[in-house]
Length: 227
Image 1 (cartoon, rainbow, N blue to C red):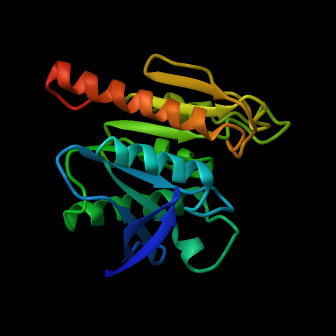
Image 2 (cartoon, rainbow, N blue to C red):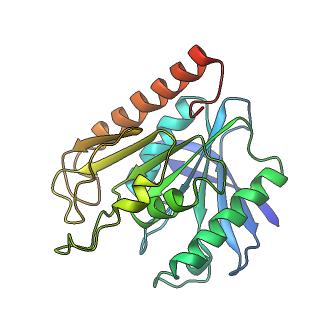
């Protein structure tokens, strides 16, 4: 694993980011590590199918989580690191994601409770692998419930398989559908479509409120939020 430091302009501020190149079964992935490692916990997020870790909703989630005292890691899948825009098969995405989180733990980059998530396809990966990585909660930004115009091709089972607290932030006019709420799943509708750029303030508020609820639950029970 190689590490180097860069300073990026994010949310109108300068922030030092550690970039780690991590070997996976399907080539090197890249982890962008924001914030200090502490006992509060960490949020690990993945990107969408054709996008990167600079998506506006991922940046917004990063800002909110850092303000809440979490370390944030944004993960680039191997196909993106290799310069490809065509998404790898689901099994490869999941295997690479699990390998990245295992490596981050081995390198002591993560501490405390683990929240995983991502936008769109990255949210699907986080849901499918939540149990494997022992996540305490899942954050889904613009979960693609079904392909546009194909509600018969529902991916709801991926969401329903998640048993830990889950937040879905979804654009009201998202052509990929609107997931329903569930026993451990909160769905917040915001203005806009699949990009979630219509009201980033609402996106930030939804994430901030949910993180505060998780922290309050952990404080009351004296245990990780999902337990």
